[in-house]
Amino acid sequence: MKGTERHRLKENELSHVLSDASTRVRDNRSAVSLALGLVILVLVAAGGYWAWNTRRETRAQTLLSDAILVVQAPIEEPKAGAKPTAGSHPTIRARGEAALTKFTAVFDAYPSTKAGIAARYHAAAALGMLDRPAEAATRYQEVADRAGGGDFYGRMARLGVVEANAQAKQYDRAISAAQALVDNTSDEVIPRDALLMELGRVQAAAGKKAEAKQTLDKIIAEFPQSAYIDEAKQLLSSGT
Image 1 (cartoon, one colour):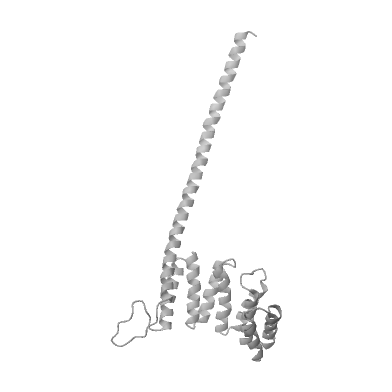
Image 2 (spheres, helix red, strand yellow; image 1 turned 30 degrees about the vertical axis):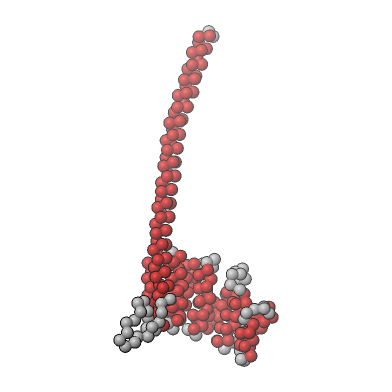
């Protein structure tokens, strides 16, 4: 083969390689552009969701703060000829009703936000104070279900379920809820002696003397430095 022919073949091969490379670059450019576009779209969507969620949480927190201010408002009995202080309430019950309305508005509008969960918890506490324990127990259970066991309000709501059911004289429900807390040994946030004391109180209120004695004796035996020792001993000495 002559040198000129070999040179021409090499040029043709190089031209083919360059043409093929150019085609791959164009194809890859389209794929890269599509992938980049999808990434940008996902980032924009994520940013939009974050901004929307942040606005919702901010609004909910503002409403929650307003509701908490109601709880902290002064009680001022009406006096003849005297103008009541702005923001005050004539009775504790009136203040509780006003606070309940505010808290309910928060969790109705923003049920899944952190502020909404907190508002639901405070609404449950207000219901208990207003002698509406059955409703309080329902609200506490809703908080526990929504917040979960890893959340502060979720844990406290489980205690609220016990107390609200005991207040409603639904002792079997209260004991069952308290026993579940005691049996959950993996949760060390709420002190175990506090949970046992709660169970002992409910058992005593239900008239289950043997069970209450067993629980209270356990506190005294296993937690000699507990802050609940005196209360446990007092319940035992009262014939529980």
